Length: 526
Image 1 (cartoon, rainbow, N blue to C red):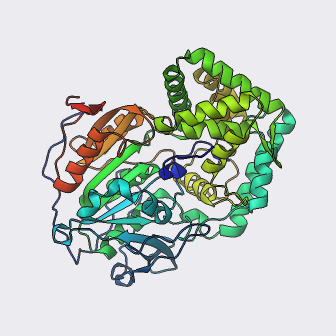
Image 2 (image 1 turned 60 degrees about the horizontal axis):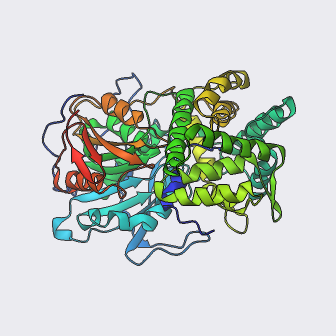
Protein backbone atom coordinates (compact mmCIF):
# COMPACT_ATOMS: atom_id res chain seq x y z
CA UNK A 1 0.00 0.00 0.00
CA UNK A 2 1.35 3.41 -0.91
CA UNK A 3 0.75 5.97 1.81
CA UNK A 4 0.04 9.49 0.65
CA UNK A 5 -0.82 11.55 3.70
CA UNK A 6 -0.05 15.23 4.02
CA UNK A 7 3.40 15.63 5.53
CA UNK A 8 2.14 17.95 8.27
CA UNK A 9 0.31 14.99 9.80
CA UNK A 10 3.69 13.99 11.20
CA UNK A 11 3.46 16.95 13.55
CA UNK A 12 0.07 16.57 15.11
CA UNK A 13 -1.06 17.34 18.60
CA UNK A 14 -0.30 14.52 20.99
CA UNK A 15 -2.60 11.65 20.46
CA UNK A 16 -0.87 8.29 20.38
CA UNK A 17 2.01 9.36 22.51
CA UNK A 18 4.10 6.44 23.73
CA UNK A 19 1.82 7.73 22.11
CA UNK A 20 -18.47 36.63 20.93
CA UNK A 21 -18.27 40.02 19.67
CA UNK A 22 -17.40 41.23 16.22
CA UNK A 23 -13.70 41.66 15.60
CA UNK A 24 -12.85 45.15 14.55
CA UNK A 25 -9.91 47.50 14.51
CA UNK A 26 -7.34 48.33 11.93
CA UNK A 27 -5.06 45.80 10.31
CA UNK A 28 -1.40 45.67 11.27
CA UNK A 29 0.97 47.68 9.18
CA UNK A 30 2.25 45.91 6.08
CA UNK A 31 5.50 47.87 6.11
CA UNK A 32 8.44 45.95 7.56
CA UNK A 33 10.76 47.67 9.97
CA UNK A 34 14.42 46.86 9.47
CA UNK A 35 15.46 47.83 12.99
CA UNK A 36 12.63 46.96 15.37
CA UNK A 37 12.82 48.15 18.95
CA UNK A 38 14.02 45.82 21.66
CA UNK A 39 11.10 44.65 23.74
CA UNK A 40 10.37 42.53 26.77
CA UNK A 41 7.23 40.52 27.33
CA UNK A 42 4.27 42.19 28.92
CA UNK A 43 3.56 41.28 32.54
CA UNK A 44 1.21 38.30 32.16
CA UNK A 45 -2.23 38.58 33.70
CA UNK A 46 -1.67 35.25 35.49
CA UNK A 47 0.93 36.88 37.71
CA UNK A 48 3.95 35.11 36.24
CA UNK A 49 7.05 37.29 36.21
CA UNK A 50 8.13 38.98 33.02
CA UNK A 51 11.49 37.92 31.62
CA UNK A 52 14.38 40.40 31.85
CA UNK A 53 15.29 42.29 28.68
CA UNK A 54 17.53 40.50 26.23
CA UNK A 55 21.07 41.76 25.67
CA UNK A 56 22.11 43.42 22.43
CA UNK A 57 24.41 40.48 21.73
CA UNK A 58 21.23 38.43 21.12
CA UNK A 59 18.83 41.01 19.66
CA UNK A 60 21.55 42.31 17.34
CA UNK A 61 22.27 38.93 15.70
CA UNK A 62 22.16 38.73 11.94
CA UNK A 63 21.55 35.21 10.57
CA UNK A 64 24.17 33.81 8.21
CA UNK A 65 21.90 32.24 5.58
CA UNK A 66 23.53 29.33 3.76
CA UNK A 67 22.45 26.46 1.51
CA UNK A 68 20.65 23.88 3.64
CA UNK A 69 22.09 20.46 4.33
CA UNK A 70 20.06 17.33 3.66
CA UNK A 71 18.19 15.96 6.69
CA UNK A 72 19.16 12.50 7.86
CA UNK A 73 17.66 10.01 5.43
CA UNK A 74 16.03 12.79 3.38
CA UNK A 75 16.60 15.01 0.39
CA UNK A 76 18.32 18.38 0.49
CA UNK A 77 15.84 21.29 0.18
CA UNK A 78 15.90 23.15 -3.12
CA UNK A 79 18.31 25.99 -3.81
CA UNK A 80 15.61 28.56 -3.00
CA UNK A 81 15.79 27.55 0.67
CA UNK A 82 18.46 28.90 3.00
CA UNK A 83 19.23 27.81 6.56
CA UNK A 84 20.71 29.59 9.56
CA UNK A 85 20.83 29.42 13.34
CA UNK A 86 20.23 32.05 15.99
CA UNK A 87 21.19 31.92 19.65
CA UNK A 88 18.56 32.17 22.39
CA UNK A 89 18.97 32.02 26.17
CA UNK A 90 18.78 28.55 27.66
CA UNK A 91 16.94 30.19 30.55
CA UNK A 92 15.08 33.38 29.70
CA UNK A 93 15.27 34.36 33.37
CA UNK A 94 19.06 34.55 32.85
CA UNK A 95 19.41 36.16 29.40
CA UNK A 96 23.13 36.86 29.87
CA UNK A 97 23.83 33.19 30.61
CA UNK A 98 24.15 30.06 28.51
CA UNK A 99 22.59 29.97 25.04
CA UNK A 100 21.25 27.26 22.72
CA UNK A 101 20.91 27.33 18.91
CA UNK A 102 17.56 27.60 17.15
CA UNK A 103 17.57 26.30 13.56
CA UNK A 104 15.77 28.35 10.88
CA UNK A 105 14.89 27.78 7.23
CA UNK A 106 13.72 30.51 4.86
CA UNK A 107 12.43 31.02 1.36
CA UNK A 108 12.42 34.69 0.45
CA UNK A 109 9.30 36.45 -0.81
CA UNK A 110 8.73 36.13 -4.53
CA UNK A 111 7.75 39.79 -4.98
CA UNK A 112 10.31 41.68 -2.95
CA UNK A 113 8.79 45.05 -3.84
CA UNK A 114 5.52 43.98 -2.17
CA UNK A 115 7.14 42.14 0.73
CA UNK A 116 5.23 42.37 4.02
CA UNK A 117 7.81 40.65 6.20
CA UNK A 118 8.52 37.18 7.54
CA UNK A 119 5.76 34.60 8.11
CA UNK A 120 6.81 32.06 10.73
CA UNK A 121 5.23 28.60 10.85
CA UNK A 122 4.75 25.99 13.53
CA UNK A 123 3.09 22.80 12.28
CA UNK A 124 2.43 21.27 15.68
CA UNK A 125 3.41 18.23 17.63
CA UNK A 126 4.71 19.54 19.88
CA UNK A 127 8.01 18.41 18.50
CA UNK A 128 7.56 18.84 14.77
CA UNK A 129 10.59 20.11 12.86
CA UNK A 130 9.64 23.22 10.92
CA UNK A 131 12.97 23.05 9.11
CA UNK A 132 12.00 19.66 7.68
CA UNK A 133 8.27 20.16 7.22
CA UNK A 134 8.02 23.60 5.63
CA UNK A 135 9.85 22.72 2.38
CA UNK A 136 7.69 19.57 2.06
CA UNK A 137 4.40 21.51 2.22
CA UNK A 138 5.51 24.88 0.86
CA UNK A 139 3.41 24.49 -2.28
CA UNK A 140 0.35 24.93 -0.05
CA UNK A 141 1.62 28.41 0.81
CA UNK A 142 2.77 29.60 -2.60
CA UNK A 143 0.29 32.48 -2.59
CA UNK A 144 1.52 33.68 0.80
CA UNK A 145 5.10 33.28 -0.38
CA UNK A 146 4.63 36.02 -2.95
CA UNK A 147 4.68 38.68 -0.21
CA UNK A 148 6.19 36.93 2.79
CA UNK A 149 9.48 35.26 3.48
CA UNK A 150 8.33 31.78 4.51
CA UNK A 151 10.22 30.84 7.67
CA UNK A 152 10.25 27.52 9.51
CA UNK A 153 12.12 26.75 12.71
CA UNK A 154 12.84 23.88 15.06
CA UNK A 155 11.62 24.96 18.51
CA UNK A 156 13.93 24.49 21.47
CA UNK A 157 14.28 20.82 22.33
CA UNK A 158 13.40 19.75 18.78
CA UNK A 159 15.71 18.16 16.22
CA UNK A 160 18.46 20.67 15.24
CA UNK A 161 17.60 23.03 18.12
CA UNK A 162 19.23 21.04 20.92
CA UNK A 163 16.76 18.23 20.32
CA UNK A 164 15.83 16.13 23.34
CA UNK A 165 16.89 12.48 23.09
CA UNK A 166 15.46 9.86 25.47
CA UNK A 167 15.99 6.38 24.05
CA UNK A 168 17.61 4.44 21.25
CA UNK A 169 15.90 2.99 18.19
CA UNK A 170 16.22 -0.49 19.69
CA UNK A 171 14.59 0.64 22.93
CA UNK A 172 11.80 2.32 20.98
CA UNK A 173 11.14 -0.80 18.92
CA UNK A 174 11.18 -3.02 22.01
CA UNK A 175 8.61 -0.82 23.73
CA UNK A 176 6.33 -0.91 20.69
CA UNK A 177 6.49 -4.69 20.65
CA UNK A 178 6.07 -5.39 24.38
CA UNK A 179 4.15 -2.56 26.07
CA UNK A 180 0.36 -2.85 26.10
CA UNK A 181 -1.09 0.65 25.86
CA UNK A 182 -4.40 -0.52 27.37
CA UNK A 183 -3.19 -2.82 30.16
CA UNK A 184 -5.67 -5.44 31.32
CA UNK A 185 -3.71 -7.10 34.13
CA UNK A 186 -1.45 -6.14 36.99
CA UNK A 187 1.58 -7.39 35.05
CA UNK A 188 0.69 -5.37 31.93
CA UNK A 189 0.03 -2.30 34.07
CA UNK A 190 3.41 -2.63 35.77
CA UNK A 191 5.15 -2.96 32.39
CA UNK A 192 3.28 0.09 31.05
CA UNK A 193 4.22 2.29 34.00
CA UNK A 194 7.81 1.05 34.08
CA UNK A 195 8.25 1.89 30.40
CA UNK A 196 7.07 5.43 30.99
CA UNK A 197 9.41 5.75 33.95
CA UNK A 198 12.29 4.37 31.86
CA UNK A 199 11.52 6.85 29.09
CA UNK A 200 11.60 9.76 31.54
CA UNK A 201 14.84 8.50 33.08
CA UNK A 202 16.40 8.28 29.63
CA UNK A 203 15.48 11.89 28.93
CA UNK A 204 16.98 12.94 32.25
CA UNK A 205 20.25 11.12 31.51
CA UNK A 206 20.67 12.52 28.03
CA UNK A 207 19.04 15.98 28.17
CA UNK A 208 18.93 16.99 31.83
CA UNK A 209 20.07 20.61 31.39
CA UNK A 210 17.41 21.37 28.79
CA UNK A 211 14.34 19.66 30.30
CA UNK A 212 13.32 22.50 32.65
CA UNK A 213 13.46 24.96 29.75
CA UNK A 214 11.36 23.30 27.02
CA UNK A 215 8.13 25.09 27.92
CA UNK A 216 5.89 26.73 25.35
CA UNK A 217 6.41 29.97 27.26
CA UNK A 218 10.16 29.77 26.61
CA UNK A 219 9.56 29.02 22.93
CA UNK A 220 7.20 32.00 22.66
CA UNK A 221 9.98 34.20 24.01
CA UNK A 222 12.31 32.64 21.44
CA UNK A 223 9.77 33.61 18.78
CA UNK A 224 9.95 37.24 19.81
CA UNK A 225 13.73 37.18 19.63
CA UNK A 226 13.56 35.56 16.19
CA UNK A 227 11.14 38.32 15.14
CA UNK A 228 13.66 40.95 16.14
CA UNK A 229 16.59 39.15 14.53
CA UNK A 230 14.65 38.86 11.26
CA UNK A 231 13.98 42.61 11.33
CA UNK A 232 10.20 42.55 11.75
CA UNK A 233 8.34 45.12 13.84
CA UNK A 234 5.46 42.66 14.38
CA UNK A 235 5.24 38.88 14.41
CA UNK A 236 3.35 37.38 11.48
CA UNK A 237 2.68 33.74 12.28
CA UNK A 238 0.80 30.65 11.11
CA UNK A 239 0.28 28.03 13.81
CA UNK A 240 -1.35 24.63 13.29
CA UNK A 241 -2.41 22.21 16.05
CA UNK A 242 0.08 22.64 18.94
CA UNK A 243 1.25 25.68 16.98
CA UNK A 244 -1.99 27.36 18.03
CA UNK A 245 -1.05 26.94 21.70
CA UNK A 246 2.31 28.51 20.92
CA UNK A 247 0.59 31.35 19.05
CA UNK A 248 -1.86 31.97 21.89
CA UNK A 249 0.98 32.00 24.42
CA UNK A 250 2.91 34.49 22.28
CA UNK A 251 -0.11 36.77 22.03
CA UNK A 252 -0.54 36.61 25.82
CA UNK A 253 3.09 37.54 26.48
CA UNK A 254 3.56 40.06 23.67
CA UNK A 255 0.13 41.47 22.71
CA UNK A 256 1.61 44.68 21.31
CA UNK A 257 3.92 42.72 19.02
CA UNK A 258 1.14 40.71 17.37
CA UNK A 259 0.99 41.28 13.63
CA UNK A 260 -1.14 38.90 11.59
CA UNK A 261 -1.60 35.59 13.40
CA UNK A 262 -3.52 32.57 12.11
CA UNK A 263 -4.38 29.68 14.43
CA UNK A 264 -5.73 26.62 12.57
CA UNK A 265 -6.80 23.33 14.25
CA UNK A 266 -6.93 24.91 17.66
CA UNK A 267 -5.86 23.46 21.01
CA UNK A 268 -8.34 24.30 23.78
CA UNK A 269 -6.44 26.63 26.15
CA UNK A 270 -8.88 25.92 28.99
CA UNK A 271 -8.33 22.13 29.09
CA UNK A 272 -5.87 20.32 31.34
CA UNK A 273 -4.36 16.89 30.60
CA UNK A 274 -7.54 14.97 31.38
CA UNK A 275 -9.62 17.54 29.52
CA UNK A 276 -7.51 17.16 26.38
CA UNK A 277 -7.79 13.38 26.58
CA UNK A 278 -11.56 13.63 26.95
CA UNK A 279 -11.79 16.06 24.02
CA UNK A 280 -9.70 13.78 21.79
CA UNK A 281 -11.77 10.75 22.77
CA UNK A 282 -14.84 12.62 21.56
CA UNK A 283 -13.07 14.07 18.52
CA UNK A 284 -11.59 10.85 17.19
CA UNK A 285 -14.83 8.96 17.72
CA UNK A 286 -16.71 11.75 15.93
CA UNK A 287 -14.32 11.50 12.97
CA UNK A 288 -14.58 7.70 12.98
CA UNK A 289 -18.39 7.92 13.00
CA UNK A 290 -18.26 10.26 10.02
CA UNK A 291 -15.93 7.86 8.20
CA UNK A 292 -18.23 4.92 8.89
CA UNK A 293 -21.31 6.82 7.73
CA UNK A 294 -19.50 7.74 4.52
CA UNK A 295 -19.12 4.00 3.88
CA UNK A 296 -22.79 3.34 4.55
CA UNK A 297 -22.10 1.65 7.90
CA UNK A 298 -23.90 2.47 11.15
CA UNK A 299 -21.37 4.13 13.50
CA UNK A 300 -22.28 1.98 16.51
CA UNK A 301 -21.97 -1.29 14.60
CA UNK A 302 -18.85 -0.18 12.76
CA UNK A 303 -17.14 0.96 15.95
CA UNK A 304 -17.90 -2.36 17.63
CA UNK A 305 -16.47 -4.20 14.61
CA UNK A 306 -13.22 -2.24 14.90
CA UNK A 307 -13.16 -2.68 18.69
CA UNK A 308 -13.47 -6.46 18.20
CA UNK A 309 -10.50 -6.39 15.84
CA UNK A 310 -8.45 -4.48 18.43
CA UNK A 311 -9.39 -6.91 21.18
CA UNK A 312 -8.34 -9.77 18.94
CA UNK A 313 -4.99 -8.10 18.29
CA UNK A 314 -4.59 -7.51 22.02
CA UNK A 315 -4.82 -11.27 22.55
CA UNK A 316 -2.87 -12.33 19.45
CA UNK A 317 -0.90 -9.72 17.44
CA UNK A 318 -0.53 -10.36 13.71
CA UNK A 319 2.88 -11.34 12.41
CA UNK A 320 4.26 -8.99 9.74
CA UNK A 321 7.67 -10.24 8.67
CA UNK A 322 9.88 -10.06 11.76
CA UNK A 323 7.51 -7.68 13.52
CA UNK A 324 4.06 -7.81 15.12
CA UNK A 325 0.98 -5.66 14.57
CA UNK A 326 -0.11 -5.06 18.16
CA UNK A 327 -3.33 -3.48 19.35
CA UNK A 328 -1.47 -0.24 20.03
CA UNK A 329 0.12 -0.08 16.59
CA UNK A 330 -3.21 -0.90 14.93
CA UNK A 331 -4.88 1.90 16.88
CA UNK A 332 -2.13 4.27 15.73
CA UNK A 333 -2.65 3.22 12.11
CA UNK A 334 -6.40 3.76 12.38
CA UNK A 335 -6.04 7.17 13.98
CA UNK A 336 -3.56 8.62 11.50
CA UNK A 337 -6.01 8.18 8.60
CA UNK A 338 -8.65 10.24 10.42
CA UNK A 339 -6.55 13.39 10.12
CA UNK A 340 -7.87 13.97 6.60
CA UNK A 341 -10.89 12.74 4.65
CA UNK A 342 -8.74 12.01 1.61
CA UNK A 343 -7.01 9.34 3.70
CA UNK A 344 -10.19 7.40 4.51
CA UNK A 345 -9.79 4.93 1.60
CA UNK A 346 -6.48 3.88 3.18
CA UNK A 347 -8.36 3.00 6.35
CA UNK A 348 -10.93 0.93 4.47
CA UNK A 349 -8.17 -1.06 2.77
CA UNK A 350 -6.10 -1.49 5.94
CA UNK A 351 -9.04 -2.63 8.07
CA UNK A 352 -10.15 -5.14 5.44
CA UNK A 353 -6.64 -6.57 5.32
CA UNK A 354 -6.34 -6.84 9.10
CA UNK A 355 -9.70 -8.59 9.38
CA UNK A 356 -8.31 -11.17 6.93
CA UNK A 357 -5.20 -11.65 9.04
CA UNK A 358 -2.88 -9.35 7.10
CA UNK A 359 -1.42 -6.59 9.27
CA UNK A 360 1.04 -4.95 6.89
CA UNK A 361 -1.13 -2.01 5.87
CA UNK A 362 -2.01 -0.92 9.42
CA UNK A 363 1.61 -1.38 10.48
CA UNK A 364 2.80 0.80 7.61
CA UNK A 365 0.35 3.50 8.64
CA UNK A 366 1.54 3.27 12.25
CA UNK A 367 5.16 3.54 11.12
CA UNK A 368 4.26 6.65 9.15
CA UNK A 369 2.79 8.28 12.23
CA UNK A 370 5.65 7.13 14.46
CA UNK A 371 8.20 8.38 11.91
CA UNK A 372 9.90 5.00 11.62
CA UNK A 373 11.77 4.37 8.39
CA UNK A 374 12.32 1.09 6.55
CA UNK A 375 15.62 0.52 8.37
CA UNK A 376 13.97 0.79 11.78
CA UNK A 377 15.24 4.28 12.57
CA UNK A 378 12.85 6.56 14.47
CA UNK A 379 12.93 10.33 14.60
CA UNK A 380 13.10 11.94 18.03
CA UNK A 381 9.82 13.82 17.64
CA UNK A 382 8.12 11.70 20.31
CA UNK A 383 10.98 12.56 22.69
CA UNK A 384 10.57 16.29 22.08
CA UNK A 385 6.80 15.98 22.28
CA UNK A 386 6.90 14.54 25.76
CA UNK A 387 9.58 16.97 26.95
CA UNK A 388 7.53 19.97 25.86
CA UNK A 389 4.17 18.60 27.01
CA UNK A 390 5.43 17.62 30.46
CA UNK A 391 7.34 20.88 30.96
CA UNK A 392 4.11 22.71 30.19
CA UNK A 393 1.63 20.69 32.24
CA UNK A 394 1.59 20.62 36.04
CA UNK A 395 -1.08 17.89 36.17
CA UNK A 396 0.19 14.39 36.91
CA UNK A 397 -2.51 11.71 36.88
CA UNK A 398 -1.92 8.44 38.73
CA UNK A 399 -2.68 4.96 37.44
CA UNK A 400 -5.67 4.79 39.77
CA UNK A 401 -7.01 8.07 38.39
CA UNK A 402 -6.53 6.85 34.82
CA UNK A 403 -8.37 3.59 35.52
CA UNK A 404 -11.24 5.54 37.06
CA UNK A 405 -11.66 7.37 33.73
CA UNK A 406 -11.95 4.20 31.62
CA UNK A 407 -15.72 3.57 31.97
CA UNK A 408 -16.56 7.15 30.96
CA UNK A 409 -14.03 7.20 28.13
CA UNK A 410 -15.21 3.83 26.78
CA UNK A 411 -18.75 5.18 26.66
CA UNK A 412 -17.45 8.12 24.64
CA UNK A 413 -15.47 5.85 22.32
CA UNK A 414 -15.31 2.04 22.32
CA UNK A 415 -12.30 2.32 19.99
CA UNK A 416 -10.13 5.10 21.46
CA UNK A 417 -11.48 5.51 24.99
CA UNK A 418 -9.39 3.06 27.00
CA UNK A 419 -6.15 4.13 25.33
CA UNK A 420 -6.75 7.83 25.96
CA UNK A 421 -7.80 7.20 29.56
CA UNK A 422 -4.55 5.32 30.24
CA UNK A 423 -2.58 7.98 28.39
CA UNK A 424 -3.36 10.51 31.13
CA UNK A 425 -1.30 8.46 33.61
CA UNK A 426 1.88 7.25 31.99
CA UNK A 427 2.68 10.37 30.03
CA UNK A 428 4.18 12.70 32.68
CA UNK A 429 3.77 10.81 35.96
CA UNK A 430 7.50 10.14 36.36
CA UNK A 431 8.77 13.26 34.63
CA UNK A 432 11.92 14.64 36.31
CA UNK A 433 10.89 18.32 36.27
CA UNK A 434 7.71 20.06 37.36
CA UNK A 435 5.25 21.37 34.82
CA UNK A 436 4.62 25.08 34.48
CA UNK A 437 0.83 25.25 34.89
CA UNK A 438 -2.38 23.24 34.52
CA UNK A 439 -3.58 25.15 31.45
CA UNK A 440 -1.88 27.68 29.16
CA UNK A 441 -2.64 31.38 29.17
CA UNK A 442 -3.99 32.95 25.97
CA UNK A 443 -5.67 36.21 27.00
CA UNK A 444 -4.24 38.99 24.85
CA UNK A 445 -5.91 42.35 25.56
CA UNK A 446 -4.76 45.01 23.16
CA UNK A 447 -3.51 42.60 20.49
CA UNK A 448 -4.43 43.00 16.83
CA UNK A 449 -7.18 40.68 15.52
CA UNK A 450 -6.13 37.01 15.38
CA UNK A 451 -7.82 34.46 13.08
CA UNK A 452 -8.95 31.31 14.92
CA UNK A 453 -9.98 28.53 12.52
CA UNK A 454 -11.83 25.45 13.76
CA UNK A 455 -13.04 22.44 11.75
CA UNK A 456 -16.21 20.71 12.92
CA UNK A 457 -14.87 17.21 12.19
CA UNK A 458 -11.34 17.71 13.52
CA UNK A 459 -10.36 14.58 15.49
CA UNK A 460 -7.23 15.73 17.34
CA UNK A 461 -8.22 19.31 18.22
CA UNK A 462 -12.02 19.26 18.24
CA UNK A 463 -13.90 22.33 17.03
CA UNK A 464 -14.90 23.39 20.54
CA UNK A 465 -11.27 24.29 21.22
CA UNK A 466 -11.43 27.04 18.59
CA UNK A 467 -14.46 28.53 20.29
CA UNK A 468 -12.63 28.50 23.61
CA UNK A 469 -9.47 30.04 22.13
CA UNK A 470 -11.38 32.88 20.47
CA UNK A 471 -13.06 33.64 23.78
CA UNK A 472 -9.82 33.41 25.77
CA UNK A 473 -7.96 35.77 23.43
CA UNK A 474 -10.64 38.34 24.16
CA UNK A 475 -13.32 40.35 22.42
CA UNK A 476 -12.03 42.12 19.33
CA UNK A 477 -8.91 39.91 19.31
CA UNK A 478 -9.98 36.31 18.66
CA UNK A 479 -11.90 36.10 15.37
CA UNK A 480 -13.57 32.70 14.97
CA UNK A 481 -13.82 31.12 11.50
CA UNK A 482 -15.75 27.84 11.30
CA UNK A 483 -14.95 25.20 8.69
CA UNK A 484 -17.76 22.67 8.32
CA UNK A 485 -15.85 19.62 7.24
CA UNK A 486 -13.41 16.88 8.16
CA UNK A 487 -9.74 16.76 8.99
CA UNK A 488 -7.07 18.30 11.16
CA UNK A 489 -6.55 21.78 9.75
CA UNK A 490 -8.56 23.65 7.14
CA UNK A 491 -6.08 25.79 5.19
CA UNK A 492 -5.28 24.17 1.86
CA UNK A 493 -8.24 21.78 2.08
CA UNK A 494 -11.12 24.28 2.21
CA UNK A 495 -11.03 26.83 -0.62
CA UNK A 496 -13.18 29.18 1.47
CA UNK A 497 -10.89 29.03 4.49
CA UNK A 498 -7.83 29.38 2.29
CA UNK A 499 -9.24 32.50 0.61
CA UNK A 500 -10.24 33.98 3.98
CA UNK A 501 -6.79 33.41 5.47
CA UNK A 502 -5.03 34.72 2.36
CA UNK A 503 -7.10 37.91 2.43
CA UNK A 504 -6.23 38.43 6.08
CA UNK A 505 -2.51 37.72 5.77
CA UNK A 506 -1.95 39.48 2.46
CA UNK A 507 -4.36 42.40 2.71
CA UNK A 508 -5.19 42.70 6.41
CA UNK A 509 -8.88 41.92 5.74
CA UNK A 510 -10.44 40.68 8.99
CA UNK A 511 -13.59 38.58 8.46
CA UNK A 512 -16.69 38.96 10.59
CA UNK A 513 -16.63 36.92 13.78
CA UNK A 514 -18.34 33.58 13.17
CA UNK A 515 -17.77 33.37 9.43
CA UNK A 516 -18.64 29.82 8.34
CA UNK A 517 -17.17 27.95 5.40
CA UNK A 518 -19.04 24.97 3.99
CA UNK A 519 -18.58 23.13 0.69
CA UNK A 520 -16.76 26.04 -0.86
CA UNK A 521 -19.39 28.54 0.26
CA UNK A 522 -19.34 30.91 3.18
CA UNK A 523 -21.82 32.68 5.37
CA UNK A 524 -21.29 35.25 8.09
CA UNK A 525 -22.77 35.44 11.52
CA UNK A 526 -22.03 34.36 15.05
